Amino acid sequence: MKLYIKYDGIMACRVILQEQLEKHEVKYQLLDLGEIEIDEEITEERFAEVQESLNRYGIFILNNQKSQLIQRIKDAIVEMVYERDKLPSTTISHYLSEKLNFSYGYIANIFSEYTFTSIENFIIIQKIERAKKLIVEEELTLTEISYKLNYSSVAHLSSQFKKVTGLTPSMFKRIIDKRRLLVNQVD
Amino acid sequence: MITHKDPIHILLADDDEDDRNFFSEALAELRMTNKVTLFKDGKELMDYLERPDIRMPHILFLDLNMPGKTGFDCLREIRTNPRFKELSIAIYSTSSAEKDIEETFVGGANIYIKKPNDFSKLKKVIKDVVNINWQFHSSGLNKETFFFSI
Image 1 (tube, helix red, strand yellow):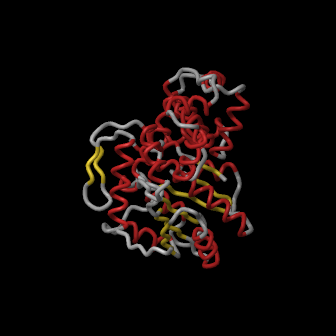
Image 2 (cartoon, one colour):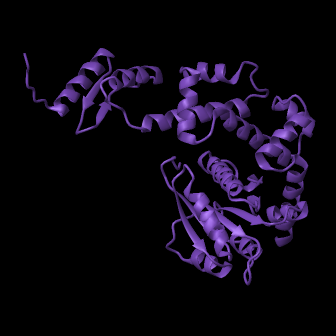
């Protein structure tokens, strides 16, 4: 027996949204077309669950939340590189996964999709950024800096420094010193 | 914070027409969306930059060897203007002498490119440069210590 149906896609979506949000016990208001106001603080984890349920119906929540997650990943990495006196001994993936409450695979995928680089590469850039800062501050030797940033040796730091900047740490220091001289001359 | 969907505004100044074409072709193949403006000499570039109505470009590729206003002249002028503090400047040159590289960084360039001799190498170099520049820009890293030599 054949049935012919006509359906109202928009109404169907609204009903699905309502049902899914209720299922996940999220307090919400459906605003105009395509907008939902969430009336409570929602953890990333719960949010991901809601997203997953909606995705199955072809309903996708748009980007903004993702860029928030990207920022949180970056902040977590920066905190790891800067605010600890010595970098954590657990693996990076474990650290980020624990801190952000997502699987590392998910974090890594979203990150590279949105930033055009990998988490590993971003961490290296941040470490070298801190190395530059420490070199400019002139309070630590290169050996002390490499220890602080968890490199196995000065050679290891220098090699990564050169990979990221194309310069050796000593060439970097020379450039900074010469620039400082120029600035002082102008004044 | 610029997102990955914002186009990157790229400027290129080079007196050689073939080089200009190579560069724009290489830039067109980038994954990141970008807008490219070309200049055939230093004066054209500086006249453009002096206009008050332009949208701030993200990165300028500057050929060192240009007649009249050289790349170095432009570099010096741009770096004395606080309006362009955030503009990344990538100098490219045929020289690979450490002394020349050092001089351009001391002069205020962020990026030094030794001109590669084939197109696929150039594409890779440009991709790496735009990518690392974008990383710096989007993560608020320190422009004053941003150096990249390739």
